Length: 319
Image 1 (cartoon, rainbow, N blue to C red):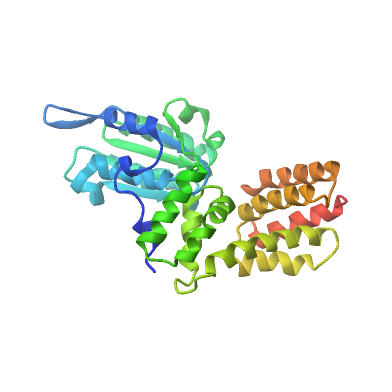
Image 2: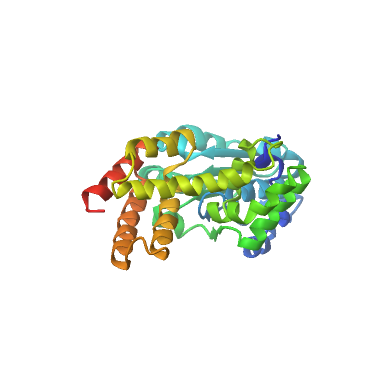
């Protein structure tokens, strides 16, 4: 099967669902005067959860604004690869100071910019201010609160939100049809979208791993994952082996800590609705889960250790 997320990403901003404010603003970022493209906007911030289209939006804008020179003048980076000030000074600054190739400006796209240290962000602010006439900077982040105020106050910000249920399902249904995948998969699309909460990249990555000749592969995958997290939640009460279960979810099934947190939230609500836990217990469990969700982005060890520490905390605090 082809790389679905790459194959079906939009080549034009107009092809993306939603983002109406951004679509209206982008044409005003550049003005053509005296035989030259002049930037009226030196930088922007895209913020929102994973899989909401920030990278795809940046790429589509690059293709719209740069045209045939896109490959020479669109420069993507991921701040998670190097968070410090030396990355800004030694890599981004020299690139920004170089002239664009065959065009009047270039675009530098910095994903996960909220992972940069404050010193690195402050250095970046200075570079954006000095190069904004010939570089369009697009900073993407999950948590805009981690972008320093000096950047937030200078750059317009656009919120990328997950697709609503109908739009998300329609997107996945079209891909299943276009890729000639099993028609039986269509029935499981609502569950798939619900599982990943509108994260299209996660949905397509799951489809990518499935056997396209197996008519029941998608339904089994969705149901298996739900059962796995509910089993983990039940194990916290004392039934089952926590270490084996948590390792299996992360290593064998490919869950990230964010997947586990989202699934645990659904499991708590499910067990409350089924009458397995009372309101006070469910609220306590949601409170603990919220505390671990807040720790997630700062956790430097493995996802397995994160999950085992979280479930151990539940047990210690009186599950």
